[in-house]
Image (cartoon, rainbow, N blue to C red):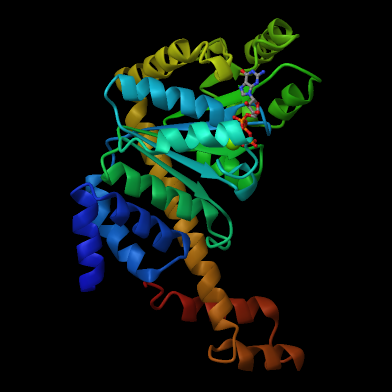
Length: 323
Ligand SMILES: Nc1nc2c(ncn2[C@@H]2O[C@H](COP(=O)(O)OP(=O)(O)OP(=O)(O)O)[C@@H](O)[C@H]2O)c(=O)[nH]1
Ligand SMILES: [Mg+2]
């Protein structure tokens, strides 16, 4: 490891916030030095409880994350919050009042808040997000919340591998429930009907309950996802939600599923890293520097077919993709 990376790594483990922030920026930018630090940090991570918050835009994910963070702080736990997706950034779409409250929260040294855009993490948002989770974990955060919007592939990937996945819905329109049908039902460990101060909240909760009960495998399931009603803006239901998260953690520990989840998380992470590496290496192999140029010419001349060329490139690729 370079000296600068060693310093960063040491400072992070000593609890230096600036080191954490710098390292996260390096991870976002795909800086190779950050990978070296992440390698070393791995053995210090694995203590945090990781909570995913997903659901339709504007359903109150950030407000709930803030409410949960305050709750955990009162319990003496330290908290990390990661908002994935530039449009859902805590400072982006939120109203001024929300923004101010978020700033107040981030002034607390026990809370670390970070927004992740796809800006730097080109094609590798999931890898970068996992990297940031691991940094905050090694940094000593007890609870790490990851907020993602909607049901995009990356978002599902990221929250699927948290310990406890919260799916946030709100009353109205029925669109949200529709979005849930599109696959999110599978990943929720706890469902939240936020904005329960609004009309139609009991109906939304009832619809959700029906959908959960008719889900295949529900009857035999050891964990039945609870539905919690909240008014995040007023902090109502946050204590109940925290209790449900706690029960889920206990369930994971007692059933042995915690290790299973951790293994799934590692698998997802290494799969993402691997496909990123292979993709990058394949791209390089096809540039004029790599063996691709000659092969491409031969393909164009019909001397060699793309499958044979791909086999040859694959042979070349797996000779050293470590970086
Ligand atoms: N009436 C009501 N409004 C709420 C409640 N919770 C949050 N809001 C408001 O709903 C708006 C969206 O809240 P956010 O917490 O930013 O929602 P979000 O899901 O993070 O939004 P995106 O990240 O943009 O998808 C804000 O103006 C909040 O003040 C609630 O329980 N009741
Ligand atoms: Mg948000």
